[in-house]
Image (cartoon, rainbow, N blue to C red; front, side, top):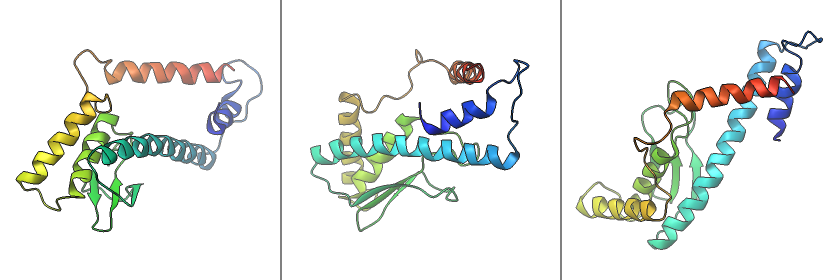
Length: 168
């Protein structure tokens, strides 16, 4: 179990059981949330880097580094710099929730196409569509389908897991 989950479990252990419990301060809760967000960002970036390497290699593209976009950037989902640096926003600008992985892959494919064509012309659009289609065929890009579990159900599952942590 990741350290963040263990720490959270230690904080909430005993809630509702009648045993003594240490209730976290607002600052402690903020630190725990920040740790969880950083751990989630590391996991997402690891997966994105793996998929970026596969897609870039397939199309003969070379990027220098793939980075998460800064939290203060609200006007774009991704950017590609002329030195080969690609930055992708991982979290929603207003809610702070992680973006769907399919959205991240769509953005990644867009930015990879910019490595060859630094505009949005016809050749760029064609390459972007080919990269995205290849990602779809390889199972990397899977946009939400009507048969997927709705977000509300996923939220209920997460809440159930938190309750289970509380009971540990």
